[in-house]
Image (cartoon, rainbow over the protein chains, first blue to last red):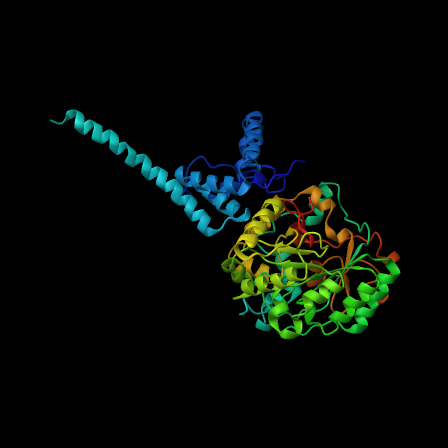
Length: 139
Length: 351
């Protein structure tokens, strides 16, 4: 059995967690769109499309394997991207994973700043477009 | 140096009673839905787990320690008085002779605080046994009488294995106590000075990494690279290998898990990360663990839970190779700690 410690795959490979509870089609006041208990159920996406899910999880595992980048570097990139796409599951998973890969709190916060800087920079650089337009229409 | 905590025993905590720890492992309301270890083993064709060989005698020579780490599975500390006597050590030597055991792994507490420690090491060394000492490093600089330990270790070819949970002070001291990192670096330099960790000397100092919370340890090879690079660049110290060890959900780490609300999640993670190939190679299959009072266990963790070996020979004075060979290993939910992810043993990852 291939074993992988990545936070999503750990649950995808799991055969011992209890069956996920049936998904309730409506939201009750106690629920939100994001449920922490949904993260361990990530592997269950294979129920509706097993072949594509298998390809996805295989690819996912390969992406995070040690390569030209270390696993820790990849985990910190994932953490930064998780903040950029604002995915609570990913933030939860890659905070844990970054710590497990030996990242420090300082490294992790610097990664979040990188994400924030790119998001902020992406807005700011459009200021040039604004300036171009201003110059175009102004006397 | 300041202590990170005090022992459960000293605080009169409920978890100082091993029956309470076992109750939490077996019946805590948050984890009753999780499978039993024996069931998962059976599902993977590994149950019941049997002893395979006897290469290592792991001897806990006492619970006394100059540190009191937050995660300690022994509940060791300066207040603990349990110490192995020379008579019990002699029984261990007799067992080594009778069984031809090649490795004796000395642990504690701080094993060096046992007044018979040096005599025991000398006797083992005389027999040509490979001696491992689980040295907490700070003991070497804790008192002038311990300053010559590096030379003593070198003289007897001791393989030193030492905990250092991270390569910086703040993370290390948070787990092991204020000032522990700086003292550990001083001790590592003293070990390096007599050849430990230096290429070509044959003197081995391995470090042990364990996570600083309710986390699984990361990949051993890449963490070892980071430790080596950082310890050399920042402090000029060297070591041989890094062993990644999973924190066992027992004793003071169990207390942390419960108090921090991480218990259910951590146990679920351990169970979810069950790795059959790690289960095949768990250390209990090849060793016997001896308690400070001479009682026998399958491993140091069973020892701390008072789960004795399933054999007619339950004390080192009654040691019998035949009675212990092929015995069924005593398992419970804490065993998921040794089979999670890349697996965990006193020698690091196993899968």
